[in-house]
Image (tube, rainbow, N blue to C red):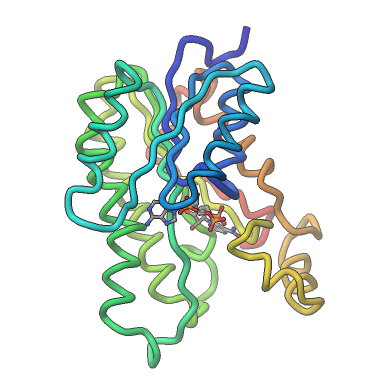
Length: 249
Ligand code: NDP
């Protein structure tokens, strides 16, 4: 029996990339997984199929994040499938790599609505569904703490704000035995980074900054999240877990 048998997990943005890897891993560990997606229902169904093929249980949950009422809509949909939650993984996010001279207000507002506001309100409205002893895991980025990379400024600002949410929410939920942590990936191979990593220069840069000399894989991140989701991480809360393969050293 998996270490998460009997638990229910919700992974936002689990149709693709890191979120999909996390959903599949938590499913293998025995959790029933709510596979959330924004637009790509077909891909979310593939994630569910992969979890079921490995002997697990999962269902899809489609709600576009980034507009008022999004979190409540997601939880209403969730309630139709499950009775309570043990693990919330705030993974869905959008990227942005524009210098300050080019970013406009609309883009900034969208970035913060999806990457910061949605996780906060998912946590707020999820608190009543989360069972005591549960887990909240926010997917941050090494960019929140790396040396300044100004062309990623707005994205890095959003991830830094998410890290404050992890820190402060850990105090709110701690009395109930619920831990809250950030996991910060470095450059990881997903749709998001495919174009950059397909160039020789991009790949060489990504490999060069990692102490381990390679680009991150989705499973590298999913394994860290699996630890934080498990009982073995019970004494870790309010923390920022560097999952950059040593790219910040
Ligand atoms: P991808 O772009 O590959 O996947 C993003 C996922 O989020 C998709 O499932 C997508 O769903 C969902 N999503 C995006 N926007 C919305 C929205 N508005 N509403 C609902 N769902 C949405 O991302 P990655 O896997 O690369 O990144 C996952 C996380 O890891 C993010 O938080 C990212 O910031 C972080 N990260 C990634 C790094 C990397 O190198 N890849 C490095 C550092 C951090 P759908 O397709 O169905 O719309």
